[in-house]
Length: 255
Ligand SMILES: Nc1ncnc2c1ncn2[C@@H]1O[C@H](COP(=O)(O)OP(=O)(O)OP(=O)(O)O)[C@@H](O)[C@H]1O
Ligand SMILES: [Mg+2]
Image (cartoon, rainbow, N blue to C red):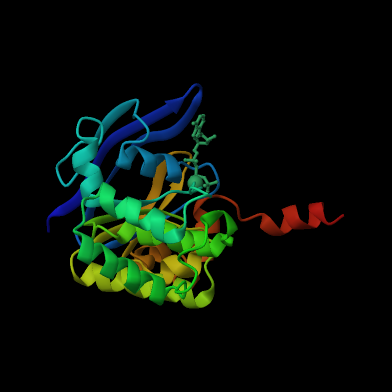
């Protein structure tokens, strides 16, 4: 199976903090890959390195054979990225923003119009597209960001907590879309703290901890690894990341 990306012995230091600690991971084309891990475990840093926004300290990253440091434009043409804390231009309307993103990717006019129209309708933003983004709710902004990330039909989607702020209907649309795109060969790597989402839509999941991969596999493999067949991904997650004393912590906090 051809690989969408291959990451080898990746390290990223921020001063004394090892955000990524000797991480090796490759994902086949057409897979939906979920990245789990506690706060600060390195998920966002990994994704920023993949898109070329952060320079690794050492190690190698290949996105369809291209290095995001030496060929950032080549990589970005193939990739759609949903950042963790997206910034939008408050004084652009949704349509102006999406037009702008479409033009950056050089999408022909008719195609661009058609795709924007489809997304606006699917996300129930039709009728609001000529309002300024500064007045959009959090979830509405997230829908615009996701649309912008998909508009050039990327082969790889890198999405940092993409379902954040989306209502159940819109979250379902995105989940089903990722699934459908996977059938067309599109690869997705996304991070989430919602374990049910990972369980429901991922072919494979990895649990990150302190910049390294604690384990990787399909959901059932992970359960077996944690030695708890029949348990939920949440149990596995808590066990693997060593946070099985949650009850004690809560009791202490409630005193
Ligand atoms: N620009 C930066 N400067 C200094 N330290 C950073 C920087 N970016 C990330 N870090 C550190 O790297 C580590 C990993 O951060 P990262 O944002 O990748 O975690 P995360 O897994 O995405 O967490 P969360 O679940 O909270 O989003 C943290 O210790 C963080 O403080
Ligand atoms: Mg993050």
